[in-house]
Length: 177
Image (tube, rainbow, N blue to C red):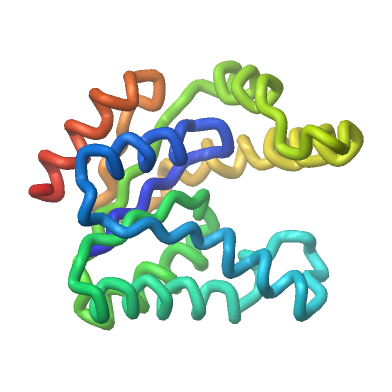
């Protein structure tokens, strides 16, 4: 099975997945961003967002399916994915492969997201790049908020202000882990 943990930047996806890994040691962790980083080294990303590359979407779905099928272990995927067409494409490919997909979305108020993003350091050795990343993350908050109405019907919405432990319990109960 695949457990996709979705939400805006700063919503707590990575923190929740780390908590899940501690409680669910057999689960594998796959960060779809890694595919984007590899693609950036090979091809130009005209929009600046590797999710706009069809190859990224295809490779992420294939990688997740491959991990689940090859290793027969649950796979955790923390990634912001809110473009309805991209969600349909990636999730549709996973479902077409017959791999169960559980989709969780962390809901967090915009002011809390902004504060969390402002409190993070992405590139400590490069303050200018750090600020560019913060601006990029904050600029995507409205799209994440707007996506709440377009996500698949079976999406489980979680209160992203709850503790990681509480959230992990909810996820594990839902997926039977």
